[in-house]
Image 1 (cartoon, rainbow, N blue to C red):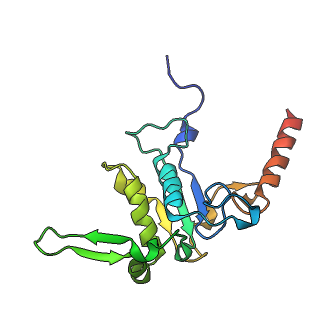
Image 2 (spheres, rainbow, N blue to C red; image 1 turned 180 degrees about the horizontal axis):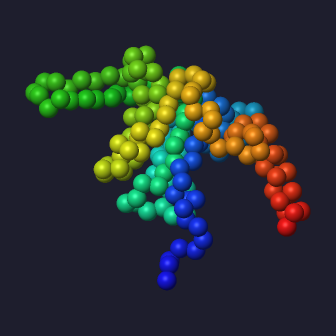
Image 3 (cartoon, helix red, strand yellow; image 1 turned 180 degrees about the vertical axis):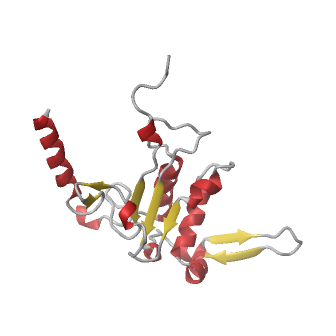
Length: 183
């Protein structure tokens, strides 16, 4: 007898999620008290949410050994939000195994040279498990400096509205109410 109830093929299908690094987010913000003071998600909170989506931990069929995660499109990476003085003090190191070849770069220099997408990619890479699925999961992360990206047709839509944009919840409620009335 099968241990799964219902159709799991839909759960294994890959969905495209859109996240804006510059848009204020009520649950991922570090400032919670007055509603007008809500900030964009900080780099760490944003990276942990992206890592969860890439691994597929938000799905009921999650298994650490299978790659059942989704695609994630991140826009506005040029405006990554960091708290404190991390932008000038955080160091990124690399080494090519030769003596005396340790190179150190601060976050602001890395952002200036490669953009905020590379900083975000390194943060997400550090939060993914260090196994053979890591590179495949990172390949599903699409990060862009501005608003423009070529994956607009792939994003999740509810009644023609992209999930996460203004007014998509009202469209979803209306569709659910018509479905209930039809049943």
